[in-house]
Length: 276
Image 1 (cartoon, rainbow, N blue to C red):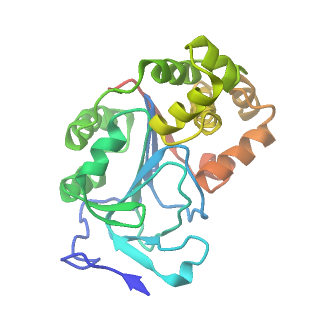
Image 2: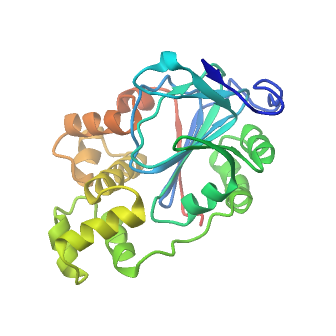
């Protein structure tokens, strides 16, 4: 079974500006990350953040049931996957973009409002997906190219700063700034004047993921920053709070569906950006 109710059909909007031979790009963008390149055939997985999947040179498919892909897919050019949602993508094309947005920001709420249809828990067909595809497919995949594109992307998607409960925002900021800190949820709850149960409930309500999952994302993000700074994988893992590079590798695969070493061996250009 295949679900496809787009007006133009899955192949109608093929971008003529994408560059299949261009080097893959991964941008660390504040509490966001953007990957542009081949899909890497990810296994079914969950992310601690939301991900906007974009087919740059053709459609992508979202499995109706990640545990049973034979039940069919929803074809689209853009799909918004919720935090902590098991998903599996069918990726017959050559080039894709994956925008990972922090669940604490207003990004996810904004993107929710721009999806023109929903199937189950997944949003599809952003209202300005043609402009989004043209921007990302045609960008120069370099640090200079990102500087020219990042602000336009933020404007195009109306990405704004966080606007959540100040206590949860404070804890999230601490996790991102000091990912190796071992303070548990109860400790953070005391620091912001909440009971442990209320803190856990409020954190999950406002971020879409548990405290533990969010800290894992912060540590993975820090690891990539450490690699950008020239650390070895073992050094990067320890500084980010992982007990070993093996622990890091297992966590990365569970989060993104592929081994970190596979990504690092894929000639990916890493760019760290302070762009808002």
